[in-house]
Length: 181
Image (cartoon, rainbow, N blue to C red; front, side):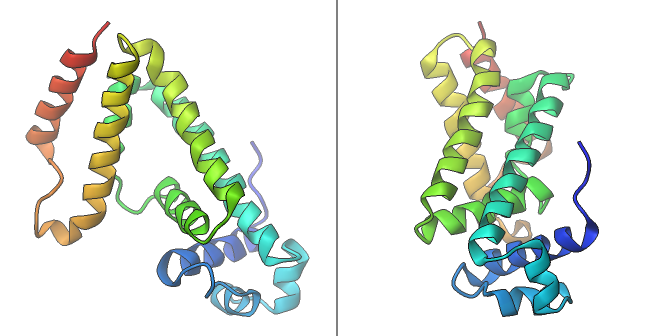
């Protein structure tokens, strides 16, 4: 899959960062251009409107989800273990795309909400054949959600809300036993 032009990605990175840190309303074209270090004309060359910027974030999420699914299918421990281990993310590209898309959805974007549901369904499609039934799939997805949510609260490891190292291995083993075919 060819990589988009660098300037376009820089603009999209800037928009994503502003949406995450300051919210969708603060991510104006002018603010995005300034953050990206490009002129407003340079921004408009790649994205004619704020809606196109938001669509760029949704496309990025879809692209990164596809890459994640490839890694998930190839992981030595299997898709379930991969999915749960990567639920504890640390500021990677997929994490940022998910957060930005969530912020857009919170701002009322129906397309962003649809994109999040689509990504989740894609992950479920890979996990479903690996677990015994729908309840097992729900367990994996909900444990993942909990890990992801608590990871966002675990600032600098102060409260230790997310299992680490051996604790995560023990949680993973428990979920795998509970959901095995």
